[in-house]
Image 1: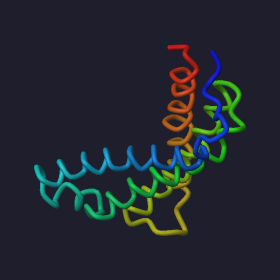
Image 2 (image 1 turned 90 degrees about the vertical axis):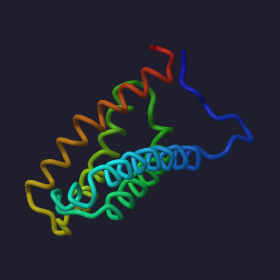
Image 3 (image 1 turned 45 degrees about the horizontal axis):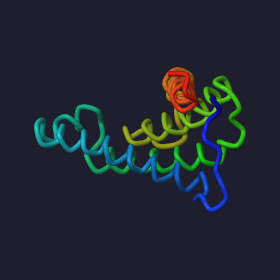
Image 4 (image 1 turned 180 degrees about the vertical axis):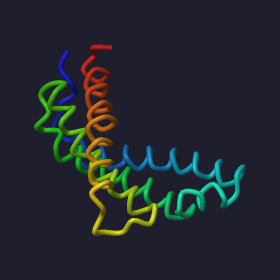
Length: 138
């Protein structure tokens, strides 16, 4: 089964993916809100960040990641290209989280390597699995 291809009159993929990313950001922000309510500000102070910074990072990465996926969707023709697109989304999100934790640019080598590992493991893994789900493999 081939993945969904837009038909005339469908909203642009970048808009659909940005809204999907926003939804993911909202869900993760809800998790952060539960952590804030149950653990107080100490849960964020221990990570050298604040609750508003975490929420804004979740929302920004969700929307930004969705835009990147929407722009790159036309280049995805198989599971491996989906994994590459996931990597491309994962690296900037990793750097955004490094920034949210108080490591403003220029980032250290450790931050860049961590973001590359984040993109390779989580980003590529999610891209690969989403391809399997949306292509009907699973």
